[in-house]
Image 1 (cartoon, protein in one colour):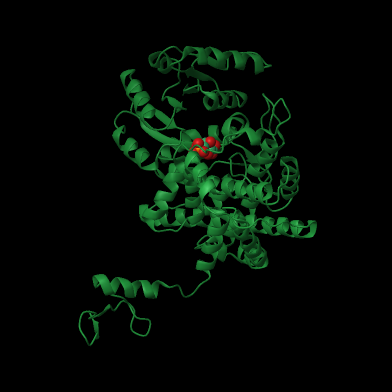
Image 2 (cartoon, protein in one colour):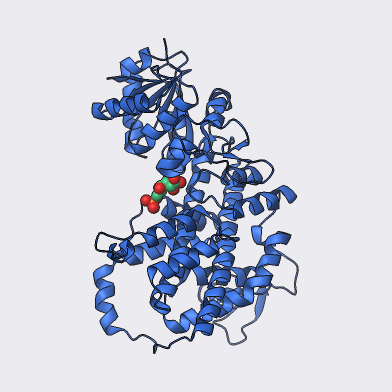
Length: 502
Ligand code: 6PG
């Protein structure tokens, strides 16, 4: 019996995707360079498959994998982004893959590499991309999938992707729970939708990760204020986060932060106190920030989140500086003041989060124009409502905003979000002002506020900046009292300093 799908790469994500596919009735020919992982995936499948039968078939080479698949072959790759994708592609070509076979890259490849790869391999096979979000658990019980590439390939992949993706109740917008092996959900909206041509899906996943960085940093800054500024215990902070997780801040990242904060090491020390404060990163947040600079769509909260990780890595330097540089005088807070700051902090997180998402969506809008894609923003928000790392109640409001107006320039101009920001901005400012006096760094929370204030300023000081540029470099400027597009320059080196039209 030939299998429906070939699968290469059986790390944690790969193995869980295989088991998810198997739960949904697909048969899989699985291969990994490490045969132990193949053995392990088969054993896990046998253990979980109550109905019996070989849903997962092991392969010991690329050739064997191809020989065990229905034609045209459909092969899913779950290998690290970058070089490994090309190594596996070369091996598949060597093993005789055919031009109408489809290979799906599910890793976090850099989107421009995906565009180049699709072109490079087009005579050998169809390279399709579909980044997966949701970590191990998402892969196992329903991830969010961001497919892009050949529309023909999508017609083949769609039913499989819709089966394994996370599902959302169409009425309420809430995720439909699925957490048991063998369990299948056939109802609701699947968290996958065709994004666009090659590269578009990886771009959208990259921005998802940029937003993920911002979301995480915002929560971490709140933790820092509560822990260092108000000297609360990790359990007290977990209690506050748990309460916040009932309202508009309800999200997967908030939920897991509570779990991390509550966890104790064997001697009852909070785990978080034992974790070294140096953050890692694999690059997707950085790519998002770089792209925002390249296309000129400001994403300061996302960039700040990347900087915060880089700053954290200078542990020794920070320790030295902590002895040298002056901190503000410490002040104490009575319980009313403390509660007030906690309330303001809640509002600050909410507003900063709105701005971070607004930045991510505006960046995608700018990239769409730059690269000639046609992105459906309501659909992107929809497929992020469940399965992915940034899943949150909030994504339903974003979906509704783009459904109200699919041409929406920026999320903060939507009537609902504009009203939310107006309602909470005063509280947000109080939080930032107080935290600044405390001396706790909150780059993401405060850069969001600057973003908000810049967006609502009809006048910015770029007039003086243009004057400076004209002074030293004759870069010219436009005037607001003259026709649009006309350029002027001041003859700065002459005594008259006449303004001349260029
Ligand atoms: C997801 C995650 C996933 C991965 C990130 C982590 O959507 O499931 O984003 O793709 O966990 O790459 O990135 P960092 O290691 O850079 O934090």
